[in-house]
Amino acid sequence: MKDVNHWIGGESQPSQRHLDVINPATAEPVGRVALGDAATVERAIEAARRAQPAWRDTPPAKRAQVMYRFKALLERDADEICALVSEEHGKVLEDAMGELKRGIENVEYACGVPELLKGEYSHNAGPAIDTWSNHQPLGIVAGITPFNFPAMVPLWMYPMALACGNAFILKPSEQVPSAALKMAELLTEAGLPDGLFSVVHGDREVVEALIDAPDVKAVSFVGSTPVAKAIYQRGAENGKRVQALGGAKNHAVVLPDADLDNAASTLIGAAYGSAGERCMAISVAVCVGDDTADALVKRLSQEARELKIGAGTERGLDMGALVNAGHRDKVAGYLQQGVDAGAELVVDGREHPLVESSPGYFLGASLLDRVTPEMSVYRDEIFGPVLCVVRVASYDEAIALINAHQYGNGTCVFTRDGEAARRFADAIEVGMVGINVPLPVPVAFHSFGGWKESLFGDLHAYGPDAVRFYTRRKAISQRWPRSQDRESAQFNFPSN
Ligand code: NAD
Image: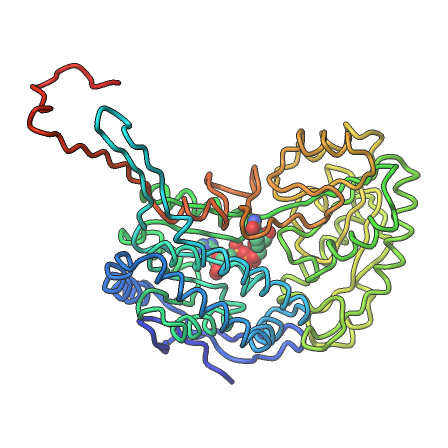
């Protein structure tokens, strides 16, 4: 049994309190994670306070060199990191590799930080006055991350925060803690000075200590909507900059002219990949017209029944276990709620053989047809391998349905009609939109974020918004008057 310790001041630090870390495919503990408290947070802040002033004054190009080496080390140890992710989360190894690669893209983007921090300059902004604005680091910033992307979501945050000259304290999900610790070791190996990156494990107590600490200037959060909202409110009360990304219910609209074979096979991956435990998973297919719905459900039901499910650490599977027993039971409970409310359960994941035969937290893929907007399976984020089909009569009805939903993270439309696609991109009230792309997760040089109850704050995660989030801007005006140019006192407001 391994101990997953805190990482503070460039070294592993044990704890008095622990929580078991469980492998969801076996329901067996694989280690125990440290549980921190306010005092642990204070130690991490103290280490950051000591280290950050020199890092702030380190040229951005030198800070970027740490990121170049970090990227190479992540690639060197990718298999080990993915094994940790798969063992603690349950997702299949190939999917863990996918998330790590998307995470590494953010390290690559952070390597360009000298270019990104260049600022703006105006010669002769006024008479013989030059004005420039630059980005300065905030100091100490924190990130709180969810269970479902143990490698990628933290990588959305700290490479750019560090490259911008900040110290960063990470509170990863206590359910999947090992990848964060491994990456902390790699940052040290890459040459990051001690104290600039700390990992404090724990739960709500650690999170609240971070949000309440006056030295922590900004908080990035990714997780469920109720927690995101609470963190945004508490952070704002404390005068902090907060970006809090929450839950989702992502719709795919299927128009009658869509290539249905392509729509069905890509929807299967987008709905059931990572057992649906993705904030960008497609959980609702909105079919325009009954013919479209009948044809799609026929294709989806066949493919959903054939998914290869098992322990994520085995090769060649489509889907692993859900993260814990309580979550698996909650997802299964939603299936019953759907049936009781009148939906048609075309494929019932509770009937998968592994549900009975394995001690792991398995659930097969489920497909619910004839779901209607008032049902809980439609309104709530289920966050499991469940795809709901809603039938509508028109394209306008599909758009109105999505716009009325509380969440607005991702969405997509399947069509061959360019005008319809363009109208969708324009009218839909969702932060990330795909056109024949079911998982429109932006690449690292764009930013990621939903609308409505899917994000609290204004700046999105990673990409250009991250530079803005992890720095504050300063505008400097300078004038070097010659003696003959000196002016007497002016009491009117100076203007050009
Ligand atoms: P969660 O909200 O339960 O936990 C997220 C983090 O907050 C964890 O580190 C956890 O320890 C901490 N936490 C939990 N309860 C807390 C509380 N009461 N006070 C303070 N901190 C608390 O989320 P989860 O179950 O780990 O992750 C799944 C959720 O995350 C889903 O809702 C999913 O949609 C969302 N998510 C969103 C995005 C996005 O980009 N919008 C990305 C990934 C996941």
